[in-house]
Structures are given as C-alpha cells and as structure tokens.
Image (cartoon, rainbow, N blue to C red):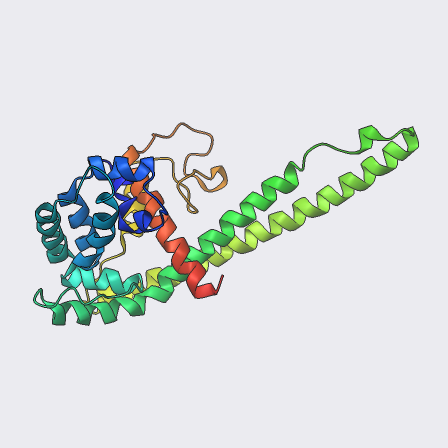
Length: 274
C-alpha cells in the first residue's frame, strides 16, 4: 500500500463532514496493520484509530482493531528508542506519553538532547525557504510578462514607456538577484552552524539522529535524484549538474519527502507566528 494512502489517516478523516468517496475508498483499502505501525512510529496514542473507526462505521467497511493494535505496538517500540527520542526532540514534536513501559526514561533523556539541536535545524529550513522564495522572485522579475509599450498609439510614447519599463525591470532584477545572494549567504551560515554543532557532538562522543527529512534529503543527494537545496524540485542555479539529466526519484520516496517538507513547513509557520 502506498504511503500517500496512509497520509489520509485519522487526521484527514476527521476533517470530513460526511462520508465522501475518498473516505469510503480509504476504509475499504486501508492496511490497518500498516496504519497502526505509522501511528505508533510517529508517537500517536492508539486512541487515534477512533476517528477512523467512527467514519468507517458509516460505510460498509470497518476497522480491524487487532491488526491496528499489532502494527501500533510495533511502531511504538521503534519510536520509543533513544534515537527516536532524539529525533522527536530535534523536530520539537509533542511527546504524547506513549513510551511508558517502552524505555521512557532513555527516550526522554534523548528527547531533551534533541531539543537542543532543533533551533539549528529550523534555521537551516527557514533559510532554505527564504532562498526558494528569493529565486522565485528573481525569475518573476526576469520574466514579468508582456510589455505595455506595444499598446501605445504614439511611437514616442511607446519608446518612452519601453525605456521606463526596461529601466524598472533592470532595477527589479538587480534587487532580486541581490536578495538571492543574501539568502544564499544566510543558508550557508545556517548550514555551517549546524555542521559545527554536529561536529561538537561527535568530538565529545555524543550520538545523534537527524529527523527523517534530513535523512531523505541525504538519500536524494547520494542517489543522484533531481533535488536542490530548497525542495524536491531541482533548482538549476544550485544543482551539482545544472542543465543535465537527473534521475526521477521513486514515487514512494518522493511522497515521503513531500510529507516531511509539509511537516517542517508547519513547524516553521507555527514558530514564526504565521
């Protein structure tokens, strides 16, 4: 079963005001063991299945509680590890108390250490978002659309308007290019700060586990998939192979990366007050 189906999950079902075709499809095809595993792996309590149960009860398909419970316990056992605690803290994610009886003390100790890494990771993600926006703005300035000069009745008027538009476009492009440069420097500083912090952990013999997003990004780079520093879409200006052919990532891997980006975008928005 594909990951994007899991993404519907209990949260998505909870948004539905009635039993939609999407809900019916989800309830009829869901792998409840896999759903439970995903919930457990992400630190959700087993009560999360209640939303799915309520909505699926309105269809001809029910929830297999036994399969869900089995998958949830398997996921929780992977979540409630020292590395799971570190990753959860590094994401500054809520701990919902699911590790009682599953090594909670070790989990919480690493959770606190992971929280110390979180600001460095968030700064990197925020800098990437700024760079992405700056690149989009630069491209918009370089290609603003049609010119109004050709619509002038007067030849002189057309020349004047064309000159002014050209002058204004040049200024906009230059300003946008400066913003890209500044955003690139900001990203370089944020990544350097992160690298120095990780080096300090390694020098003092402290282990760490990066959140899933950063692991996926490493996989994209190492396997040569089309991926720039600001998101799944390749950014030619910052690609190691600009203008060249790049391999397409497997759909499931790309779906996971997209889901992780959405999670970090929400974290960034919440902490910036947007």
